[in-house]
Length: 273
Image (cartoon, rainbow, N blue to C red; front, side):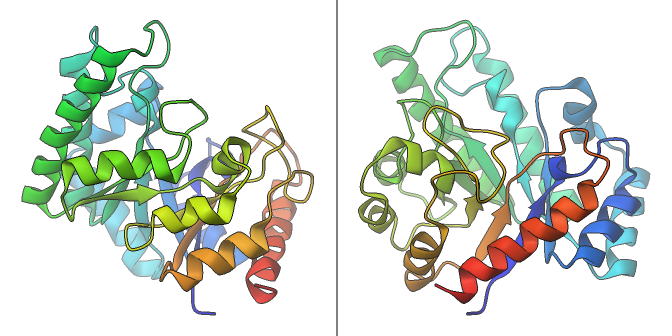
């Protein structure tokens, strides 16, 4: 099987420099990095990096021949596209991320399938707002040549590929696709392979994450209930060649060994698919 397996930035300690993160992921054997833009000030402020900082980071990638190729825009938990309170901020966040991606040479952005998250309740109005604002930012992404992918989340709004596809077909743009989280859809449906079929031709990449019922993060690979081999075979048969190991650094001293084991675990799932 021909595939690329990226590493989620948060799998490494946050205090590492970008040069250290790039060199570490390359040394271990991953194919690229996925940058996290979460809701912390430190991560959101990356969208305001000046030209010199961007050139510096890009030069490291060129020197190492190892690249940051995607962004996970989880800051949308704070500023979801369906929010009434944060509507303007949510649109501006995605547009800033698109411009940032263009400057960084990053080709696609994972969006969060949340219409609202913290202090607002999902309802018909929030869903209408989500679709309206998604249409606006997708048009902006098309103008800039950046592809957006909606992640399947842990919420009822968009926890399956089938649900995301309804939104994709409504927007109807080649710059908006599905970016499934395999762990999330495992917890959302009893027929994972059928759900994957709904996204045929529209799947941008896949997050390979371990989960157990009711728990969506920080489950070690091999300790959950995700059927990686059969799901990967299904994704691959539909032409999907890009994947990301989504795992988290949780303060372990042997975190590099954990990443090596995670890489071997997932590569074996491809070998047996």
